[in-house]
Amino acid sequence: MRVLFMSLALLAPLSVQADIVVPTRTIRAKEVITAADLGIKPQQVPGAVANPETLIGQEARVALYPGRPIRQGDIGPPALVDRNDLVVLVFDRRPLSITAEGRALGRGAVGDRIRVMNLSSRTTVSGFVRPDGQIEVK
Image (cartoon, rainbow, N blue to C red):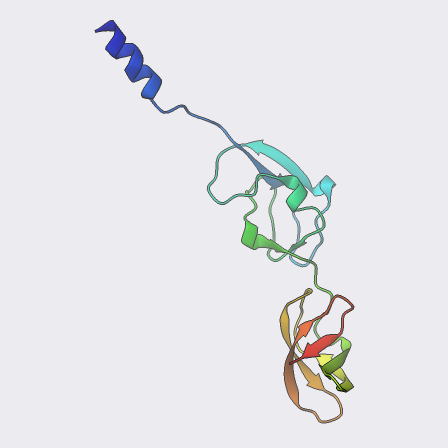
């Protein structure tokens, strides 16, 4: 009987407390997150970010409030292009390469697809943000 009790005690789930990352101040949407903005809270929340390194340098997509968990969908890479920015549109199909000036109709980070108005033709096109801030039209 004593052996049975001990083996049942070993099979019982252990309560493990995990750490999550929380803001130390209110971080507004579109703000870039720094190390000073983050703290650790001993709590287990499914889907919450546990490693502060993954958040530093990222942009808040929504307002983040002190003490509340940060989820992966709440952050993203910083936007290179803002709405109404003047941008260069690039269409590159070797041997043909065309560039034009455009106005961004949305915000976007590297790799994001955004709409842009070609200022010459007043036509709206979609393209992907390049690392240099140009918009590649496919």
